[in-house]
Image 1 (cartoon, rainbow, N blue to C red):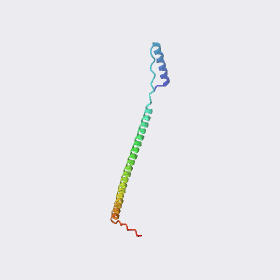
Image 2 (image 1 turned 45 degrees about the horizontal axis):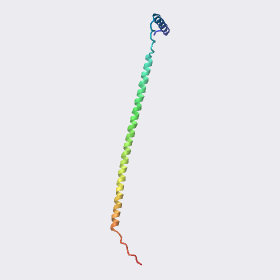
Image 3 (image 1 turned 120 degrees about the horizontal axis):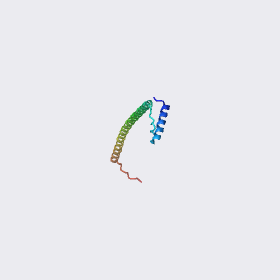
Image 4 (image 1 turned 90 degrees about the horizontal axis):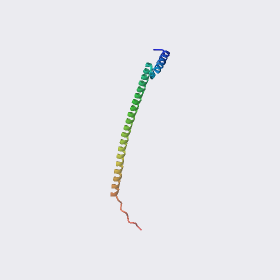
Amino acid sequence: MRNSLVTLKQRAQATREAYARGEAPPPRRRHVRTREWREKEDLRLIAERNALQAAQAEQQRKAAEAEAALEAERARLAEQAAEHKAALARERAAVEAAKASSSSLQLKPRPLSR
């Protein structure tokens, strides 16, 4: 790696020479990240991606559990509704039977004695 002070002196000299010739100075060096930084950034991005994937998997697992619980509740409610309908039908049949038996046993009113 070159000494930064030497590099700065060389750049200054090149700039002076360009101005003396009437040309534009050389472009400034663009900062380039170091290999170590890129490796750390890659590791950070990989860890972030893995955490995101884990969170998504957990969310999907919870959604599947919630869906299964919802289906079980729907089945329980459907069974309960069927039981209620059957009980209601039995009650209606009993009421109809009671009406039928009471109509056959109609009492005739007795004349009032004075």
